[in-house]
Length: 226
Image (cartoon, helix red, strand yellow):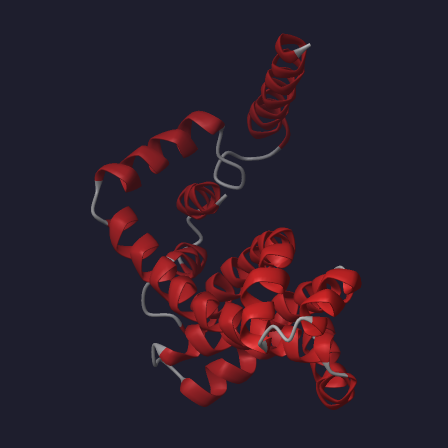
């Protein structure tokens, strides 16, 4: 069964590359859609140069700082909303508005406010990512075992020990889910704001190749981004 899954997965990749090669050879000009071999050479050139390390490091730095702050803020807000109906009423609408607003809006606002400053991508990641964390943490807090919490209170266990030994261990799966979705959104928004006003990073290189209409270079950075 495992071998069969890998065979079908490999067949999917092979079919994709075959359709790509056929399209670039017979349907469109190769400068519009370069064949896979040309893209592979372009990617190898980026990998062997210092560009890959420089620009990936710039993007990952913004994501690491921004998402760490977003995860902390989202966790605090999520626990507060999940344990207090007052905080849920006070913050609920703002979290939902942030969650449903397109990331492009935050990227453009941060680009206008911070310009070419390095704070723009970090702030955009924080504003976009914290709501995904908060929503997952709220659901986890509300699903926590009420009987265990009531027993701890009956034995006069301090609140900070209940939080540490009862609530946080139960929230571990919700933290992982929040990290997965929040990080994926943070990765996209950081690259998007680099496309708009970045001076380094993966998004900046995509914008440079786009402005030069270098489809091979653009697709190489896109595939490295994937």
